[in-house]
Image: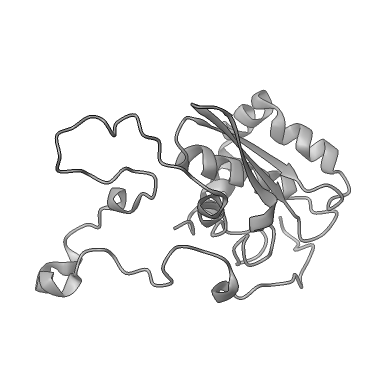
Length: 195
């Protein structure tokens, strides 16, 4: 990673990226009402989890079996803010992940597959596997267990796309990669920018 392979990638304006999230990053608590203690009270990140069901005041258990649907836009919002390992930009800004390249397929009532096709910035990107692994880790950490994650290189966008897809689809290789301390450091750095 000492040398940047694509020093002039196409960059999208963050304001032009599709999202349901608000553009401001203000917490849900009214900081002004806390006065002097605004900086001492930790923010509750669990309150911002888009997949956590909202608490209900009723005592009925009829909604416990209801499954909140997750669509392609929510998947895009989860992965578009991942930082590129070579550039100080997000995968959404570099058009590595695109909303039309995210597909959700229901396999059964309790099981769905998320397919994300990534588009490397150049056809010989040496970090395509690392980017795919970062997307996979982000989704596996964020989505409920009913989702199976499949990350692939979009066909015709990488010179060794078949080999990269084979690596990303092999559970043993992915597990071995996640045990590599140096690689995990790169992935942590990529995921620091996730909202």
